[in-house]
Image (tube, rainbow, N blue to C red; front, side, top):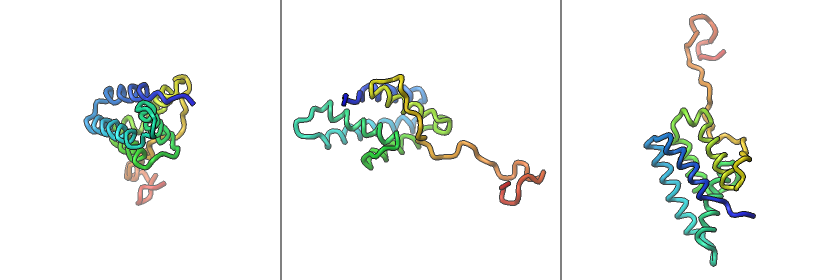
Length: 144
């Protein structure tokens, strides 16, 4: 199996983070980068290169983004990153799309973007209680 191209993966996400330019999102990304570097150093196998260990750690992050099994700290880092992304990018699916693109790039096949699991579980549509209650469309609780 080919080595996960973590440098290209990171560059793609870093570009998105720079584009969004939100202090909380920037901070979350810096934490992800630092923690994954630590994870790679700690989990390095004997005789394994630093590059291979780093590649495995970032691939674990990519697997977590796809909803696959990953180490709990990695899943937590992904959740933190997604939650710190501004609502407009989170609810529109932009952060999910950027992660999918980065994964495809990291796997060396940027044309194949595996689209599926949304990293955001928040609803995209909100019903605002009372909107047309005076017209009788809603009951007291704001339900149909």
